[in-house]
Length: 438
Ligand SMILES: [Zn+2]
Ligand SMILES: [Zn+2]
Image (cartoon, rainbow, N blue to C red):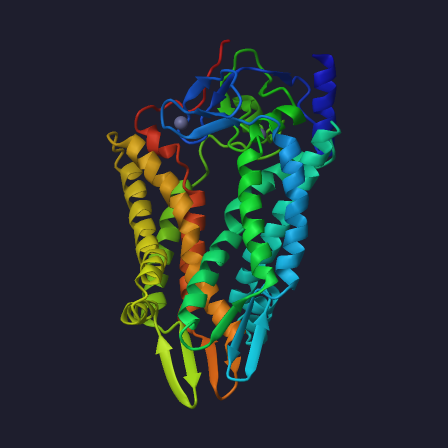
């Protein structure tokens, strides 16, 4: 125990803080579900099994055999593929005798040059910075794990890694490439370049690495103790980032989670107010996003524009039903569905509705999962703007609605993140802190 205490003190000092004098820490085979607040006993998992919350069905942990060797290999492969997919062309478009090739970085640059800074920043963050961070973080976490060397800041990196996941959107860009290519196919000759193959492999590898990474084992490696109190038998709150159980006295004296350094809250402060405000803002922005044009096409002096909806209609007119359905679902159905679900969740919490909590928990997870896919249209516009620049023959420019639409996607994603899913279950019980006696 004393060596554990020393390690913990070291960890706290690394984070630039000193722990409370009377801090008591130990390991308990109990955890509180992050999504519903239910206390449960953790059983040892067989390899390749997942542990689910018996109350709300959320995945608590999974057990993978030989996971870190696999993740190390995948992370190195991902780094190499990332460099290729960023700096080598992904697509080449030929119109007559002219041809134009683009890289992902060109997409960012094309928007930047047109003073479309918001969209350029969104592209840079979601397609370059977050994926790069994801890969570097993986290497920083699993390489030292392999050699059993704890490094400074690993807890922080793992915390950010989990946060950054939903903002790394390469797989959505891949779908946009498919949509964009099919839209362009009738007007010009389009070729896939080496960057697009690298991107495809990179996406597959990152998905696999994420499935393999065992976060719970990793937290246990950083610090085996997951139960921190300063008074005997006091109530504990759950850390939503590492699943540690943190004594109420520590939380109330403003202390952070002793294991991962994140703030611990009974419930996310002002969760409902924040989610309500963001949902409302997104609903308002959804109107200009659909009314205003998203793209202007100029061909041989003739100018035409597309709104999100007219884009879908013209796909149907060209008999491209598959792509029309993808764009319709991603750009029209998903944003509306998200706004409706968020409103329903907020209203159910406000009115303390008890029935259907499990169903609402599922809707909440659905919202978190599908929200990002609306970015498809934003990426399609970016591809068009970067690729279709043939002067008088054919030019495409982005229009105002795409900024409004991008904002709707980002704001609804943040709205889902600020919503505390434990509120869904609170109509059932009042007491948020838990006492664990075993
Ligand atoms: Zn649960
Ligand atoms: Zn924690």
